[in-house]
Length: 290
DNA sequence: CACTTGACCTGTCCGC
DNA sequence: TGCGGACAGGTCAAGT
Image (cartoon, rainbow, N blue to C red):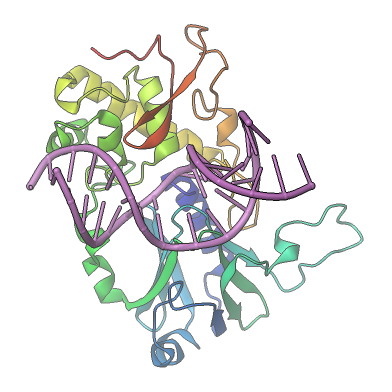
C-alpha cells in the first residue's frame, strides 16, 4: 500500500489520536511483525507515553517517553487504525465501519492505552514490521542511512534531484523514481502520475532526460504528492487512514488504474504496460520515448 | 558498483 | 462453481 501521501495521512491521524496516551499492554502475533524481546517490551514500551509521530520516507517513527521509538513500515498492505474507548455498533450507525470490526484476521499487533482506547496494526500480506529501538539508534538503521531526500522538504531543490538521478543514469526513469536512495517516498502510483504529468515515458533512460525535463518532473512530483496528501492519499485495495477510512486521491489520478479510459490531454486511451517489473500506466501519445 | 530479478505473504480476479 | 495462474501500492538479497 502506502507511499508517502498515505503514510503522511496516517501520521497526521495518529499524531492527533494517540499523542500523550500511555501504553499499558501490547499483543503481537509473531516475531516477524514485532521482532523485539519481551524484556525490551516490558522495560521500554509498557508504561511509556506517546510523545510524537513523525515520518521519514514511507516509515513512521513513534517517539516514546522511554527514549525509545516504535519504527513502523506498512509495506504493501499494512494499516494502523485507532479505536477509541466507545467505538462499537451503535443504533445511529447504519453500516459497521472497519474500526468496529477490529481486531480482524489481518491484525498482527494491538497496543492498548490507559484510557481503554487501542491501536491496531493490521497487515494482510505480513510484509510490514514494527521495531522498538532506542530513539538515538533510529537514524542508524540501514534504510535510513541510504534513503534519499524528502521531496516535500522546504530545502529540496531540482538540482539536487537532477544530481541524485545520475546514480541511476542507465536505468529507466521509472526504476529511478522507485529507488528510495534517489528520492524518498515515491511508489508505483505516484511514479506513474508524475511521469504522465511531466509527459515522460517510464521506459526513458535517465541519461537521456534534459535538465528542463528533469525540472518539470521535479515540479510535478511535488504537485502530485501535495494533491494526494490533501485528498487523504490513494486507496487502491487495502489502504485506510488512522480512522479506518479510505483515501480519495484516485478520483484525481490521470493514469493509475485507468487503462482503457481516455487521456484528459489528448483523449487517446490509457494503456497498461510493464516497466521495472511493475504494472505501469501511461498515455502512449503524450508519453513517448525520445 | 549499477542494474535486474525473485522472494517474502495472502487474497482476489480472470480465463478456462 | 472450481481451479490454476497472474497480479497487487515495497523493499531486500542474490544474481548478472
